[in-house]
Image (cartoon, rainbow, N blue to C red; front, side, top):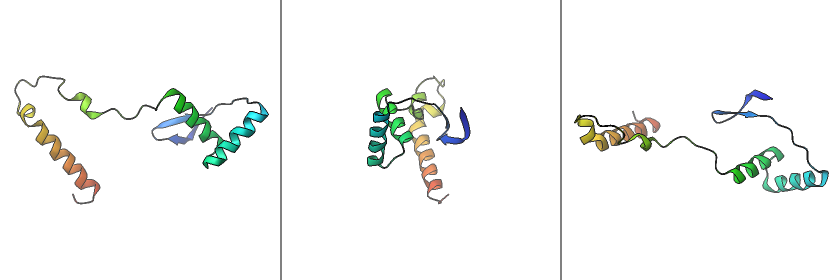
Length: 97
């Protein structure tokens, strides 16, 4: 069951049910309490650890140098343009725009 009010970043969470041996459940709850997290968070961390880090946002540099602009100045000045854009974003985030 998906709850529309439960989000993890941009990804909706799905609800699932797992059956555990009572002793295993007791130990898992104790471990979660040691870590100061809920049982659900403890289980999510274990699964994420086993499966590897979740996919993050793609790296913007993956699109660099993919196409030939036919000699447009962007190929000569792309580093300057990127620097300007990053500086403008920094200034915006710092409230200096």
